[in-house]
Length: 305
Length: 295
Image 1 (cartoon, each protein chain N blue to C red):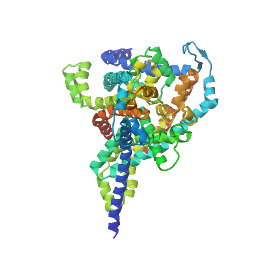
Image 2: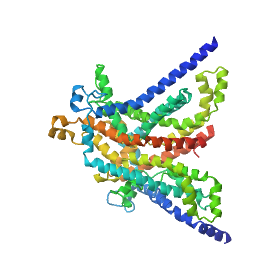
Image 3: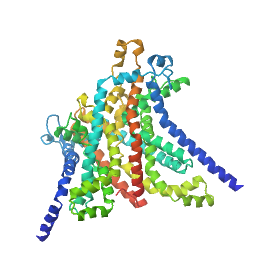
Image 4: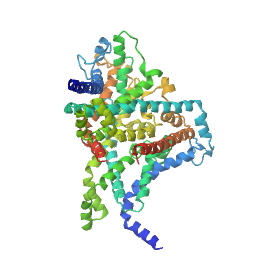
């Protein structure tokens, strides 16, 4: 009884704070949690246009059965895994190498200028990046095709080629994020005591040895942290980028969960299946983050939480 | 003898890394130069030089005139500015309040609120339920469809909260003793001192708003609400402006190659970001840098 009184007293005492916080709660409930709730219902229903989530018919696991048996969806899930793994494997190391190079450069003013230049593409939208890709890879006026032609080779229709779609997608993503990706490592690198390098130099350690024995161990916690975060996005293959870059002639290698949900789930109104595959994506992502965070903590002592 | 070899390896290493970094920097600049050059080239020159132009001999502004004469781009610019400025202001306002409340360590329920916020970083409902909710809220085909859904960034909220928690305790305590209410503490002490965190998160929010087009694609069918990126996207798509038709009606000298129009479109999209970049550099990049050094 007394405890209850004290509890309400505390609540009252902070009344104004709760009042201030009400819009934040309203936002999270309506915009973030209500969709999650609807997703868990709609994934088990046959949702049709015109009928609401609650009034449509329950179909049990039918939507999930379609997700895991439909040939097109299986290809979409396979593409999603392939593109995001490729993206991770190819995109993970270059920012680390670049950060170490920035760190070791003796021309400090020139280095700062290069850093400034290399952060810029991060701030361009995918629409702009596609424009740049078009400028280089289109058949009519593309820079690369012009070079090929000058060298006496055949022009390549890069933008509608299934073979070239992924290299261009992943390459442009790397180009956009390369400089920006170094920032998180630069912070850890500047914290390294310079005297360690001096001591190593006196002991006769060359540049490569110093990287292996001093620089790399110092940024390892950050490396595992970044890896952990990136793994969490394993099923987010960059839908917005693909949506901007792809066209019907490359669907076989380009279509991922995000683009399929937009084009077929929303566009062709297959709401139930679209919700089910979205839920699957979100769920796998969550599991992967939790597992990789656990592994990261266990082996490097560093995690996201 | 050994020492000589060592000095050389240091020099060699510097030469290698400096050249790699220089080449990479050039690959960041060259595309922009190339696009600018193409956008300023007239159609006759493009044809004469077989569409391979880096620096035009006779720069012309016809492609820009064509783009900027389209009324949709001005309307789109207005929408983009509105969502970037007003949307960001609203976001910062609500995130500051949220962060302030969450920074009060004695507040009952604080931990539950934090878990509620963190969980949304890990899990979401996906595109279709989100679309459904925006529809239920009656936001389809309103400018609010681009402002309400991204209103609070959970990660940004936590960054501001940590920043407020690290403010010197004594400042808040001193006004508390003077009998200042929670709201007065927020307005007179916490809000002014949170400037650096708000500037960093604000820059992030502005860029996100400026670069967004997917929300317009799914939530808007009325073209007069399209933001700039969406209009640029449509121009970029094959013959988005019915260019050939327009060329047919125009005199020879006024013709514009569709390539030039696309390239000018890219420049129009890039310029605002480049103009904003010094501020981004100052508040955002520096903010992140300092934040992660501290953390």
